[in-house]
Length: 409
Image (cartoon, rainbow, N blue to C red; front, side):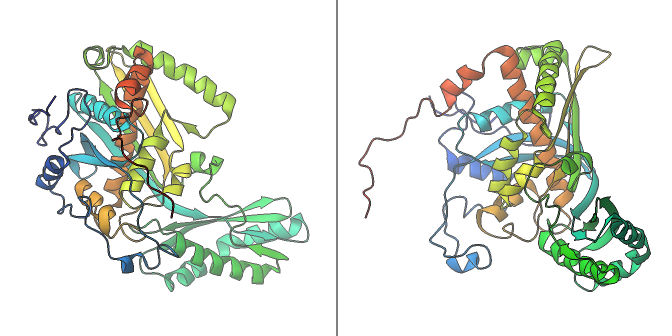
């Protein structure tokens, strides 16, 4: 069946994406690119297939042989009530998981009809955790007592290494005869890992020299790119919340479920998560974040930390659904890394998140996207149509063209 023309939705300025009868984007990729460009993105020349000069890979990969290709779809429109006001965006997602983009689009559509998602960044700070080792516990205690006394000198030291970041907190945590030195930095609109690591090296060197530490390990308590309790409790990077009220009638009409059913299944999930000991209490945060990070040139390995968080569902006094997510450790940026060129730059432009001053908006969109995906997937579980959707839209029913397989050289 040919794609239908996009139709304006009265709830916002962005038209619905071209879709086929199943709810997936249709084959008119160029039409959808024009929709994104009309919504304010830069020309999507690299998304359309124009190559990036090989010289642009310098500093990003070694022994380069080319570029990986992952299908890129648009979900949305996503309506966000952010700290700078209300806005709508199409959300680029790079994935090979059939039905995923359709599911996120469904969640975004329902939340849009509900009035949008309120999203805010509630905290910022990139932590590093050098470890210093002493002869005994008393040595670690003495070093911990010195930390607040040297804080201002460390702030000045860090300021000599960067114009974009600053040391904002320092705390010593005694762990037997070891001291975990928790340092927290602001990083501007970058993730800022390299800046923070360099600063942590200098600060821990200074403390080690002043306290005669036997050993010093700049990555001693290494939270980097691993699930960990600090990511859930203290947060790292940008901490964001997103929530919405979804009317009972809307859930029944669009998702074929009820607030009670969703709250009930979420409660059972929470019991399972407690038994698993996981730091990820969402339904599928890793799915949406990985696809968004890949599309936008982020370090995808940070999904391990970024997907840490909570999904909160509850029944309101009016009998509607409260739905919210808290993602305390979003490690993302709009400057630096792979964000400044090729398809990544174009995808960030689709979101209105290019360059300085845009990282908080990017985090709002990421949190709102996670909420949309979790609502849609949990509703599929509650309504019993999850398997059917994957049979219709996913790779269980591939339609790849038949032809000769490439031969090995």
